[in-house]
Structures are given as structure tokens and as C-alpha cells.
Image 1 (cartoon, rainbow, N blue to C red):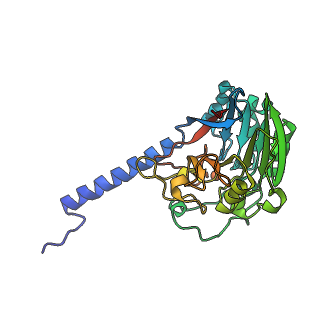
Image 2 (spheres, protein in one colour):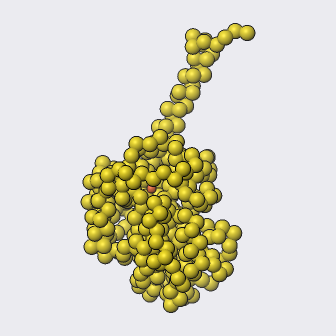
Image 3 (cartoon, rainbow, N blue to C red):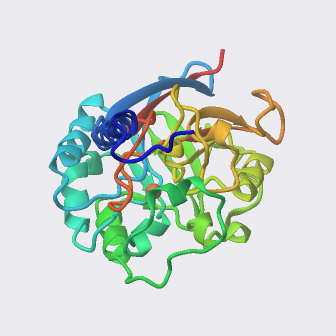
Length: 311
Ligand SMILES: [Fe+2]
């Protein structure tokens, strides 16, 4: 049998095609990180007769100062005229990003808003193999790198009037709708203090929302059990590197990949109106770590959730 060698023209052609395909896929994956997309959904959450309420869900912005296209796209979202902004964390990816996030949110900061932080608001990103994201979580957390200015981020957002939901509950009235919130610090770092927020959700509110950066099951279970109508989270990046059609391999937490992004029920097989169950909306997020700046079949996104009355 003849041995193949690098001088074999057939093998060289196959190797060349493989390199070209890899380069093409990488170029596409880099391009997709900037293919910013708005997703719109409608959920029946309001009492009958109330005016629809537009909630803009932002997550995982991962801002670095040079990302002008992302900054312009974020600023443009105010044209949607949302009634409320929910920011589920990972706003930062650079120590100089707080003023950049503030300027990019721009007029969105004049609207009612709530937020929690994610791990990337606390710690500087580190160089990683992008494909490690697809491997099982071994529980290692990057908490030894330098801290990012998360306190300045909190101050910037609260000074603008947004509510910090870090391990606390809050109530706000938007238009004619009373919204009650519970929020936790990042469950991915085990910073969540469910003991501080658990308990029956406010029965007098029109809508009850549970907020977290990472959608770990213990948090979703608690919110659903306490009677929250909808849980909003990010962190998963929608799987970030997905199969054609957007099917995720991973969520980077204990949520199963089938719910890596979009609107689902929690528990997954529950029905609206069932006690102990809630809607779950997971954002695929707007950014990525600066060291894994690729996305495949998983566009960066913000979501406009229109809450409409129950029929
Ligand atoms: Fe993130």
C-alpha cells in the first residue's frame, strides 16, 4: 500500500481545503459576534384591561472601550420606547468600560430599570481556550484576576435611577402596572443569597419578576416556588457556539441546553397558571469574553418582551 506524504497532491488538496474551511468558519464566527439582533416576544402577564408593557431585556454586554458598533447599536435601542429595562449582568469586560457602558446605554438610563451583576462585572477576563466553553463545568471560577470597577458600575446605574437587585427585593410602578422584583447576586460564583429574597412573592403586585445573571436551577426553582410569574436571566450566551439551527451544546451552568436561550417554562414541562411554575426568559446576550470573540448560529441579541393582559 502506498503511503501518503505531504508531497502527495491529493493530501495537500485535502489539507488546503480543511485550512480554508477552518479559516472561513472562523471569519464567519467573528463576523457573527457583531450581527446584533433584536428579538421580540409577547407574554400574557398583565391583569385584564391593562395597557401592554414593553420590557427591554439586556444581558452580557461584555463591553470593551473599542467596540463602537456595539455601542451604537445599544444606544439605538431607545427608539423601541421600552417602559422598563432589565439588565441581567456581565456589562463589563474591561477596567475602563464603566463610562462606555453609561454612554452606550445613554437615554435608556432615563427609563425605569433594574439590574444585577454577573461574574464578568467583578473580575477581569482571562485568556482561555474558546472551546473550553463547550466542555463540562469543572467548577473552577476565575476569581483571582484583578477586580473590575463593579462598585462604580453600580453607582452609575443607581445614580441614573435604576434599582440594584443584588440579593434584594423591590417594588416599582411603571405606568399603571405594579411590578415586584426579587434579584440575586451571581449564582455562577455562588454569590446568590436566596435566603435574603425567598418567601412568597408580593400577591398585591400585578407582575412578579425574579432576576438573576446565571439561570442555575436552584434559583429558578426557588423563584417558581415563591410564585414569581417570570424569571429573566442571561449568562448562557445562548450556547455561543451552536449547531446549525441554533441548538446549543452547553449553558455554562446546570440548566439543560434546550433552554439555553429564549422563552420557556420552568419547570420545563409546566403549564401557565400551574402553581409552582413560571415563565423563564434567557437572553443569549450581546457580547462575549474578549478572548472568545466568536459566535456560531447564535446571534448576539437584546429582547423586547411585550407584556400583554391575560385573556
Ligand atoms: Fe457573559
